[in-house]
Length: 212
Image 1 (cartoon, rainbow, N blue to C red):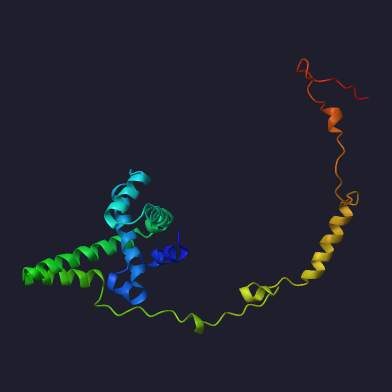
Image 2 (image 1 turned 45 degrees about the vertical axis):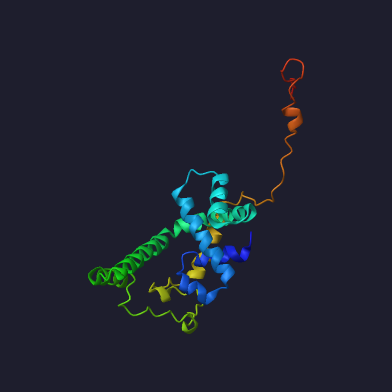
C-alpha cells in the first residue's frame, strides 16, 4: 500500500476532478477516482466479503487482484476518518447530483430547471458570501505570565504578618506533637514463606506453623 496514495486520498478523495487535475499526475488521478468509486460501492454493500470487493474492482476497473487488495486496504484504513467526515462526503454527493441535474437540464434546454439547480448550488456552497479571513497566528502576541505570591493581583487583600503567623503555627503544632517522629520508609519483612506456606501437593491442605 502506497503511503503517498493513502495520504492523498485522506485529503482529496472527494475533491472535484478538475481540482485534482491541477494538483496531481494523471495516473494518481485515475487511482483516486477508482478508489472513490470503490468506496461508494463499499458503503452500498456493507456485508460484502473482501473476495466480492476484489471481484468487483477487477471486473469494473480492469485491474489485477493485487491492486484491488491494495485499494481495499486503503479504504479500510480511511473508513474511520471518512465516517467522521461524513458531512463532507454528503456535500460532495449533493454537489455531484446538482451538477448532473444541471447538465441534463442543459441538454434539454430546460432553463427553468437550470436556474433552480444553479441557485441551489450557489446557496449550498455559499458562493454569495465572502471568504472567511484566516486567523493571523503569526501576529498573535503571546501573553507574558510572571509567577507571583502577591494575592493583590487577584484583588485579594494580603494577610498582615503572614510569614510570622506561619512560623507561629509551625512551632505550636510541633510542640503539641513532640512524640511524632518522621522516619524513612522501610520494607516490611513479613516472612511470607513461613506465614503462608505453599499448598501440600498430597491433600491440598496447608502446613501449620506455630508462631511463638
